[in-house]
Amino acid sequence: MDITICVGSSCHLKGSRDVISIFERMVEKYNLKDKIELKGSFCMGECTNAGVCVCLGEERFKVIPSEAGEFFEKEVLPRVS
Image 1 (spheres, rainbow, N blue to C red):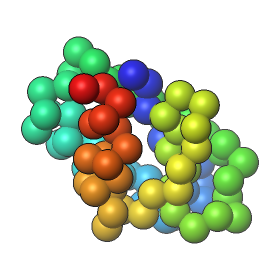
Image 2 (image 1 turned 120 degrees about the vertical axis):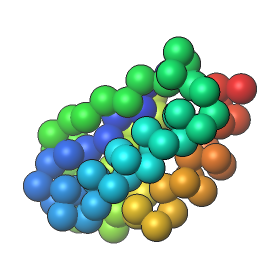
Image 3 (image 1 turned 60 degrees about the vertical axis):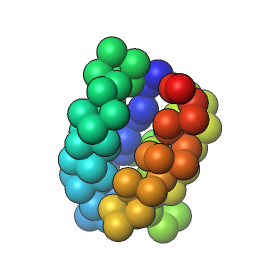
């Protein structure tokens, strides 16, 4: 599964670096290195929305750093299990 996280200017200011770090820890915690690839992308056109733009396949989500772990467990884990 590919997870693409926006690292454009707006998302960077909203905490994309923190979201990436949290996702990296979650991938390690659940031993998913062989099932998940984290990718970065510049602007994905969601700048006016609250949160960092995260794509799971074609589906887009807005994730704030304080909820990134919960998002991973709720949205990502069921898709890779």
